[in-house]
Length: 130
Image (cartoon, rainbow, N blue to C red; front, side, top):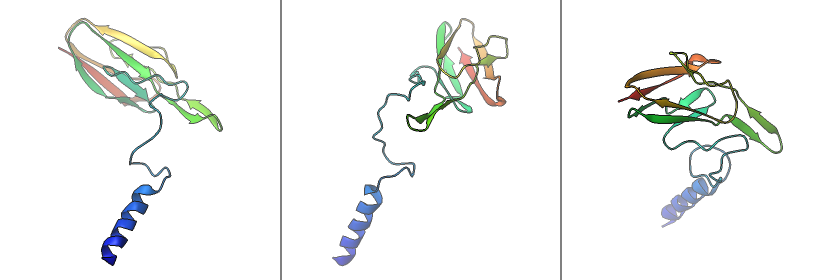
């Protein structure tokens, strides 16, 4: 019985402690921080040093939207927003920006690769148009 009580207390302490240890559930609101745009459900989120997802497949004629989500910080310590671009190998590019969105419509089937002009190939993605 004592072993069962100790195990229960250990579990309660483990899951009951707050902090920012990563993992677990978040009670933070789903609204993005100031300066960030809600990640598109059918597009790409531009985060710090990554496109998420980095590859998507869409039918021809689809408009894909990239939303910048690069602002971090809070009202006490200030915000930092990092500038990125969506630069396609075929020459089409967004502005280098730290907030906002960019949309491109893909009329023709093929694979369209892109990268961030600031970070190069380390931050890249592709759109596969069927």
